[in-house]
Image 1 (spheres, rainbow, N blue to C red):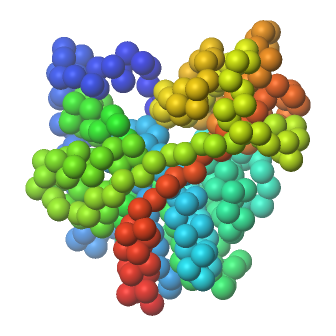
Image 2: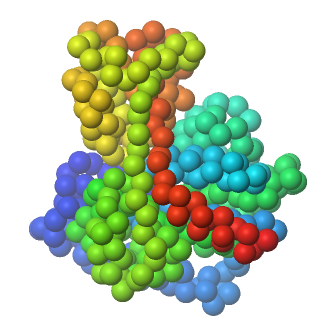
Length: 343
């Protein structure tokens, strides 16, 4: 996905001049995506079905909506239910991201595999793989780990080459912005795409708001609420050092977030009663340069997604704030029912 600036994201919130001028390009984009999906539906392009159920967690909008925390919590729920899940991803911005070949994630090298998949593997301990062709990555992972009985795809709602048994579309408080397709708006696909998903999850969005959104697409998928919760922080150079997040109150703090919606992380910290200097970095910021050099604060709070790329800094001021996605039990029940129906 190409880089986008704050000015474009601002234009996506309204149907102003910039967005309107981009409508011809959005029409071309919409025609291409519709044709591509039709070619898969007609069998012109191959769709690969795997021997185990596949759950896809994605979105129809550009940018982070909280998919990865949802994937982590979902995998943990599957493990508690006695299943043996694996996880796959394209590996955004990893060196394998534009590779046809698949690669199993065996190290914490985010530059090689991508920050999100490394984080999922570290948090859950499940076998993980990346690859531009997700079906190929899935087959490779199943060959390496034949006891896996379900695969979770982190992103990939638009990757129709991989057949799926359950689709979950995730939204955050930004919703669908101005409701227009790229580049005139934030939509990867039209809102009508919600007619074919199995569930819609709102990250910090009420079910009533989600129902209104789905109704706009003349769709009636089940809607579920999700909250991101942060309680503790741990020191990056010594993860055994953990402390309640509220214990940082009164300290000189800076908080950095290289995620799709950095303000969401900052809001979580404010909810814990913290005051800080905020550093909103680009999504998937690679930390090739040290943004903390020369910062006067005593403590630097970062997201887990950033932490997998900061270990080489060995800065004792860096504290990681893990978040947990709190899911509705009924969502987990739906996922398990779909998995067992396939088996």
